[in-house]
Picture (spheres, rainbow, N blue to C red):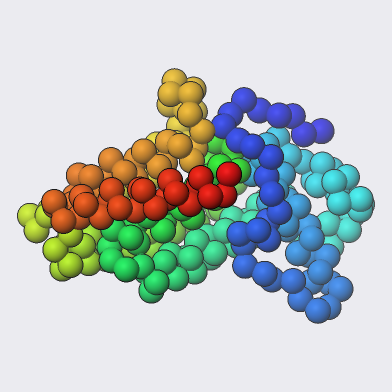
Length: 237
């Protein structure tokens, strides 16, 4: 049975609210995607360890045997969920880069996307992955150390070129620092001490980093995009 853990999370919305639509026409893929979607929702809400294959089967109204026709074990299902999330993250990062007005705007687009994901995520997910699903955790680390590092590095270089970031910054060092700081919200003792959810912590880290690299021109853009973000939030309320 699923046991609710202490942690910063809210009820998860459907996997397809922010993951790429992967539903295929054939019944076998429909079933596989239903399993993947529900597993995602439960994993994000309760953490990986707390959710059993029985929980997923019961939630879907199907037998555990049916799930095993598509996923050999829980480890394979976790790996499929994580792999899909990472692929979606890469797609969104690339889209943000193409549509962003400038380097600062690109960071704000990233903050908006991260907020959507993290506000529905249990802070134990990364710890559970590292301890109980090491192959999936290795996949996550490759994503962080390769894709995200390159992405942040390119943003820093773009910001310097656009004369929004300070020219004397060390892009390689700061890019590595930034991707490592992404792990801070998942440290259980840290979240317990600050009493904020993952999305709130990540946003503060985003802004702290951004304020540290911009020049006066970039600082004005931060204020501009913050005001636009506040206005959008008020309009949606």
